[in-house]
Length: 86
View 1 (tube, rainbow, N blue to C red):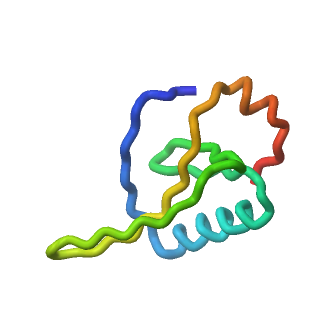
View 2: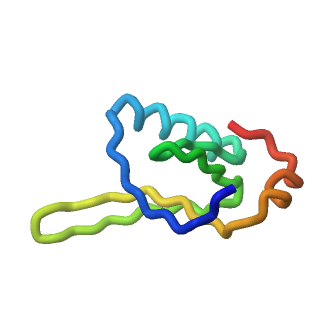
């Protein structure tokens, strides 16, 4: 798995965002890990990820970010968890 630094922002349609948020909400509610594809890369969000909301206000725009953060782990550790993925 490529662990090189990455910082991308992708604009999705409302329908795509709704589908991604619905799957995320289901995974959070069921306390399960989650897989999401962003700008062509599939990312595994572990069950223990921390969820936060961020609000920024500038002179000409406001922004709300939904953030999930977790420490990186090796592929072997990921597979050893034996968790079902959504």
